[in-house]
Image (cartoon, one colour):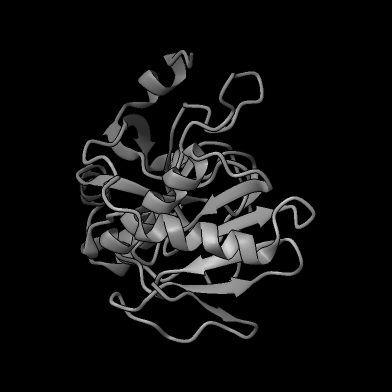
Length: 242
């Protein structure tokens, strides 16, 4: 497979395009598979991520999987760009190694509405729904963790019911509490720390999404699946997060 290196901005590319390697400064490249959000594209991203993560490749420092791309940070004094491109090409063309079909499923309890979901009314009104319908529709799907960003541990979740597709806020709202669950466009997400919110907050989980005291500080990683479960305020307040 021919890998194209481009110093400019990525072009609009579909699901059947060949991967394109974009240079990101002197110590990074981004392998772009497409410019769309698609489960099959994301599986290709995670396949390359797993191959590079488990392989013995001196000079590769960090890997950052996203919706449709994989960022690779490397040490050019250990691994030249030319060598890195060969590694990428070899791993893209390697047979087999399919991503597992049974991802780790993490159940996330959520108390919807009220003070925990201050934007529930706006989301419900936008779609001519009642607040209980918003909660039920949000908790129904099995979500995919496409990527982790924009703040530590924030999971971008795909699989939101189309009936809850809501444009992002025009400007970020007030700071929300850790564990706040939001929706925006066709995605859902969970704020791991206190942060201004550009997404519509419809609930909150008592789980600690990011905790430096844990062996694994991040609760989620790309490729996981998330299922939300509705809980009452009493359950929220009595919940013991281990």
